[in-house]
Length: 353
Image 1: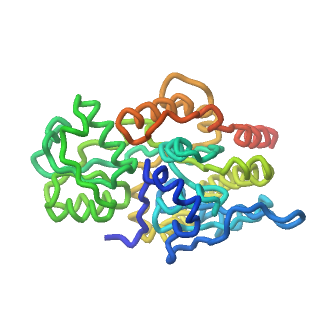
Image 2: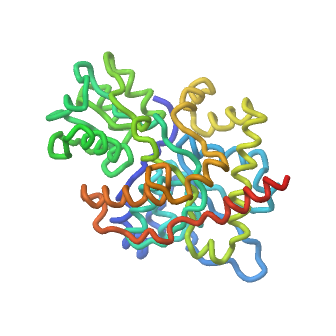
Image 3: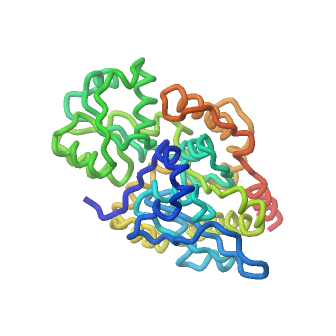
C-alpha cells in the first residue's frame, strides 16, 4: 500500500463535531499533524496577514505544494502557512474551529459545514473528480442491481459513500438494500482485498490497492456522475471580508501555479508525487481521474444553470439529496455560499495581459 496520506472526504462528520469544536477547538487537530493550535483571531493592526491554508491527499489539491516550493505565493505577494493534514476530516474541522482561514474541500462537505452553522465561502473551483472516486466490486458482481444484499465498505459519510448512494438510486435501490460496512478508507480497501466485503467505495490512490484483489473490477465511478464531486478553495467568511486582497492573491497564485505546471510538467509532477508519497509513474495514472479547472471553467461554473455544471444548481441538488438520505439534518441556506468576484478579477487581469 502506498504511504500516501488518506483523504477522508467526510460529508457529515464535521457537522456532528461542529459544536464540539467550538468548545474543544484544539482537540480536533491530531497531535501528529502539522496544525497550529492557535485560535482564529485576526492579526494585530499593522502586522503581516498570513493565510493559513489546509490541504490533504487529493490530486486536485497537490498543486498547492507546487505553489509553495516554487515560491509562487511569494511572487503574488501573499504569505501562506500551508498546512498538510494526514486526515481530510481534520482539515474540515480545523477550518470550522477557526484554526485555519481556508481549506481545500469538496462542495458536499462545505454544504454540510454550512448546514451545521459554519459561515464559509467558495471562491475557486480546483477540480472535478472524473473517475478517481470508484465503487470496486468482487468477481461475479456485474451490475449495480447485483449489489442488493451485498456487504459494501466505505468511510461513512464520505463522498465515496455519497457516490455509492447515487449509484444505488440510479438503479432504483436505496441504503436499505445493501449491508453497509463503515470503515475508514484505508481499512475499507484492506477489508475488500482480504475478502471480508463484496464491494468498496474508495478514492485514488486506494483504488489501486483495492484493485489488487484477484478478479476485482470497477463497477462505476465519479466519471458517470459529472459534477457530483467538485473540489474547492473555501474560506471562512470573516477572513474574506477582512482581507479580500489576500483572497485575491490566493486565487491569482492558483492560476499562476497551473501556468507553471503547464510549462514545467516534469518538475511539477515530481513535487506532487513526492507529497503524495507515490512514484511519478503512479501519480501520472491519477491524472485522467481529476479534471483541473481552468479560469474559463471557473467562470462557467459560477454562473446560474440547470445542470450539475452550475455550482448553484449542484449545491441545491446536493443539499436536497443529503437531506433526503439523512446525511444532513436540515436544508442549509446556500444563498451566500459562492463568491465569484476573485475569479472574475483574475480573468479581467489575464485578459489585459
